[in-house]
Image (cartoon, rainbow, N blue to C red; front, top):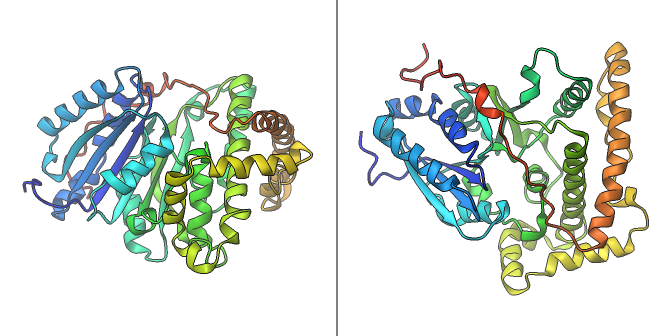
Length: 385
């Protein structure tokens, strides 16, 4: 089968910013997926697009070399095409919009969005996420299980144990979306446009609009489903300073989602809500500072840092309500620790927002991920029996 001239059924967008140290291993984990053998068997195709945005290192060169090698040697090279886009403008949100609205094939019915600093661990991850949406028409987004790299350590430190326990509590909740990797129906994705000042919480915004069918009905967690035997590995923040920076980023992001959704979009009439992607796109084009002004007004009216968005003081304890007995007692110290970390992060986020900072994204490097890519695991060359 030759894919030339065929419209891809799936489009995979890999967003990268200065990931020269990790993107090679990331792409290797992608090409080891069983997705390609399964597509080949069914005479389906996909496209893989790497969006290098504002890179100042050789991320694009590393990605292109990987693409060239796999397009030449992969056992199922006829099931996919590869393309590199070198975007001058830095920013994940801009790259997301470019992929969804311009770069991905219009005929593609399913879009994968993923970061370039993760490793896809289970060999059936992408296929199982795709299959969830095929088998469950009520679902709009399929997710996998994110795994911190420290979860594979034989003797994690005390701080790392707290970090792992916090993740276990978070993942016990239903309908969790991580921007690191998810699959979404293209029709839904193309009704979403991410404003440039949304900052670092695009996954929270996407979850909200998908679960509420674009703010037109009560939230339904069934619209987001987790695939079985699907996982990826990401590098965890391992120092107190990095953890606090990440939490500050999260608090800024969740505040902006609150302003955008609760204080703006929910005030639109029903017809506007149903097509608010176009409305946001028009606002971005005609008045690039529109969201920043809304954020400034919200911060001006907010007296205390724990009032940045609803539920700040409770959300660390909510997972405990789903636990029973000794399990609740074991996780209580984790929730208390997370509560104080959240308060510190809120205070720092409040100060930053008062100073007009919305685009806060700490520069981190994923230098340890390659060790989780076993050289003994070749690309899938046959369908599982």
